[in-house]
Amino acid sequence: MVDNHLPFEDRERRLRYLFLDLNSYFASCEQQERPELRGRPVAVCPVMADSSFVIAASYEAKAFGVKCGTMIGDAKVMCPGIALVDGRHSLYSAYHRRVKEACEMVLPIDEVCSIDEMRFRLLGEEREPEAAREIALHMKRTIAREVGECMTSSIGIAPNPFLAKLGTELQKPNGLVIIEAKDLPHRLYELKLRDFTGINKRMEIRLNAAGIFTAEDLCTAPREKIREAFGSVVGERWYYLLRGFELPSEKTRQKSLGHSHVLPPELRTDQGCKEVMLRLLAKASARLRAEGFWAGDMSVSIRGKQQGWHAYTKLPPTQDSVTMTEHFLRMWEGRDFVGPMAVGVTFTDLHPAEEVTPSLFDETVSRSDFSHAMDRLNQKFGKNTIYLAAMDKVRGTASEKIAFGKTELFSEGKGDNEWVDTFRGEK
Image 1 (cartoon, rainbow, N blue to C red):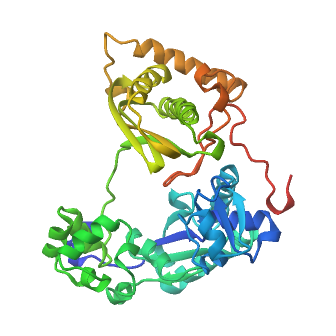
Image 2 (cartoon, one colour):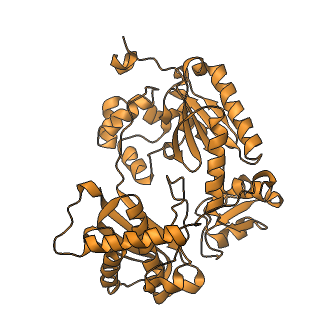
């Protein structure tokens, strides 16, 4: 009988997955590229201003308490002598491609989960603990040889992807953890609730309200209690995942698309915010068109030092920059922020083109054709060959960043986000 046809409790729970999590990825890339940074505390920053924040920290910096989200001014106090470096996202994307190539020398990649995380499936004899361990060590050695000695990783090996990823949290940096069925559930007890992927602050509060305060509480709770705590069938999935059973993956549909940008000091003005927001709208709508989506909702936001601002509007099914700009300018009249620090735009209610019936009374179709023509010219002749006049002063701002779940940088035109290889001295 095929294993998948058996009741969950009767299915085998042998090792099936290897999960790789690169350690302090952005900071490690910088240390690999710049030998003078190795062994030193390093913080990667989006903007060189004390009021900005750290987006990645090396383990040497983490030893002083500096972590992602720490204000740069605070990081200087916490860790005197810390090396602050500008984020170079083209570099991180290039290293990502090199890491993928190195890993493929060892095992085929089952799924690229993010810029610094990959998943691999183990087959046949690879599922034996010692064989799996040797594969993991071989992968670490191959990355060090092919990409660089600073590119360390934590690897988790387990019966399902959920536990394999959790395994990477149990030993950092440069860890290797194997979680077998016989190790469950006690092997997970040392984790905190928010170490589990999918449990944020809000979910932690819900679990606490249900009497679940520790990883042991979560792992030993009856199925009905976990389902009730999560408030849906998701809790029942967790019950089985925590016990090492493999469940069918859930297909998800992209729900939103957007961009944000931390403002440099010289653009922290009313006019600066407006111009950068127009730049983000143009960039996000170009990405919307490249991915074949039309949007039905648009949100804009400004994070302020004293007071922020957020506005939302419905759109006719739209993917063109002009229509979005018109809606934004109407929303802009109601702004009331103080001390702007960062701006953002998000499109929701996304639908692929085949599901969209454009309005008969709006110009969105002809404008979409016009925007696509602009995209083709930029792809042929270079980024910002043609652009809307309103973003003239800021067309060079808001460069592409690696966001959560993203692995490649969106190109707005020929030559955009290219990185000349400097790996191991290559030209």
